[in-house]
Length: 341
Ligand SMILES: NC(=O)c1ccc[n+]([C@@H]2O[C@H](COP(=O)([O-])OP(=O)(O)OC[C@H]3O[C@@H](n4cnc5c(N)ncnc54)[C@H](O)[C@@H]3O)[C@@H](O)[C@H]2O)c1
Image 1 (cartoon, protein in one colour):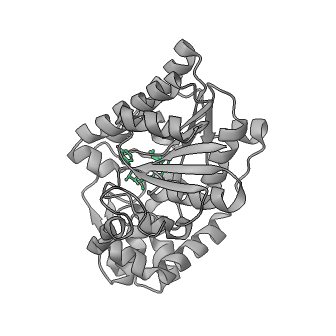
Image 2 (cartoon, rainbow, N blue to C red):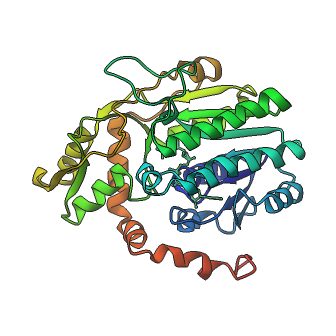
C-alpha cells in the first residue's frame, strides 16, 4: 500500500513508521509540520530507505496534500498529526482547533476528492470524558470531552463520521488510551518523570496524584492501528486499550523505585483545571472483530521503556535543550530535498 502518514515525526507516528517499514512492503510518505513535538531524529534509521519519503508541511495545506496524494498514488491515510498536550490546550486552544479540527477536515476533503481508499483518524479515549470509579468506555459511550484538546479531537471524530455517512467516504476512527514507550516528548508523564528523576529534579504531580489512566505500550497501539487500517470496517470506531489502570502516583513511585531514586523528589502541585478523574477502555470490539491483542504486559513494557530512556539520554537531552530542531536543516536543504539523496 502507498500510505500517507501525517504527524509521523511525533511520538506514536515515528514508532508506527519504523515498525511498518521494518515489517511490510508499504511505501510511506510522512507529512509533518515539525512543530515543537516533531523530531525527525526519531526517524534517522529510515533515512535512505527507498520506501520512505519525508515532506515538511501542514495537513491544512490543501494544495500540498493534493499534490502528495496524486504524485505518490496514495491509497491510505493515517492521521496522527495533532496538537496533543492537554496543558498546552488550556493555555492556547486556538491552534488545537486549527490543526486538529480544520487540518483533519482538510485531509478528509482532499482525500474524498481524490478517492483515497482507506482513512484512519487516530483519536483518543479522552473524547469520552471522565469515568467514576466503575465502568469502561465502549464505542457507544457518549462523547463528552472536558478539555480544549479532547474537544478538538472529538470534533475531528465527528467530521470523520459525517464524511462516512454523507459521502460514503471510508473513514475509520481509533480511540486509544495513554501510550508509553520510546521517543515520547518529555513533557508527558512517564518521560518527564524519568528525565527529572535522572537529573534529581522535582517530579511535579497534579492534585493528589490519584487520577487513573489506562496505559498501553506504543508498539501495541501501532499494531492495532495497522490492523484497523488494513482490516477495519469503513465507518467504524475501534477502542484500543491495555486493561492496565494505574493512578499517576503509582506510576511515579514505580519509576522512582526502578531508577533507585528517593520519593522526596515528588512535589504535589495545584491540580489541572477540569482534570479528568479516570479513563478505562473496553477494547473487546477490536479483539473480537479483528483479532488484535496487546503483546506487552505493563511490567515488561515499562522495564524496556525505562531502559530506553537510560540508554538514550542524548535523545531527551537534545529535546530538552532544543537542539533536536537543527536536525531538519542539517539533513534537508531549503528546497526540502534530502542532502545525501
Ligand atoms: N500520546 C498518547 O498517549 C495518545 C493516546 C491516544 C491518542 N493519541 C493521538 O495520537 C496522535 C499522535 O500522538 P503523539 O503523542 O504522537 O503526538 P505528538 O505531539 O508527539 O506528535 C504530533 C505530531 O504532529 C505534527 N503536527 C502538528 N501539527 C501539524 C500540522 N498542522 N501538520 C502536520 N503535522 C503536524 C507534529 O510536528 C508532531 O510530529 C494524536 O492525534 C493524539 O491525539 C495520543
